[in-house]
Amino acid sequence: MLNYLDKIKNTDSGNFFLMAGPCAIEGEDIAMRIAEKIISITDKLQIPYIFKGSYRKANRSKGSSFTGIGDEKALRILERIGREFGVPTVTDIHESDEAAMAAAYVDVLQIPAFLCRQTDLLIAAANTGKVVNVKKGQFLSAGSMKFAVEKIKEAGNDKVILTDRGNTFGYQDLIVDYRGLPEMQSFGVPVVMDCTHSLQQPNQSSGVTGGKPELISTIAKAAIAVGADGLFIETHPDPANAKSDGANMLHLDLLEETLVKLIRIRQAIL
Image: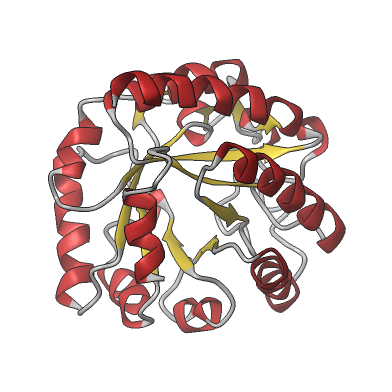
């Protein structure tokens, strides 16, 4: 995977790389269909691609919300996608003892934003030897993320990605400070903009997180213009009926036209 990390930072096409897929693994058929569609687009556009899907959703507003189809079942779906399509895969982990388990199935371990300061979790992920993607906490400055990078590297793993997902703005909104992208790049790691979670409207009284998906392309365009190395986009063929985070996901049918526009911006700034 180290060679792939080098590749996504310096591609022949000059494109950004993409982490994309459903919020959660809802089932094998839909996960395979989403992966196949995205791969057909990214292959055509020469965009390095990592399939994203959470095998379990540990952070939900309500106890009755969907959390997953079973850890092993979901992880085996991720493994199949990686094997059959020949792409790297990424999934979240939430506790230290999940690191080795998930690492047996995927290429990249993702640390959720709320957990980015959890030292034991970061070290456990680092010890697997996998690439570690750390989401920046909504409560942290970009500069504070250097400590997450240091923890992973001091554990002997230099394969680190940082992902911005906005900052808390009041109780029920987020705002993106684009100054943070070059600041985190100064730590010597690729930096990604999460274009979907940065548009969440959390802590709604209904117990269901809201969002502003109509602004996904706006967030993405600005990130590419600033020089983000990659983008993180959750996408689904039917966001209204997705089992997690449907309110801020990009409709799968809109992905290609969005990426085409972003490539033009990327080419303009090279």
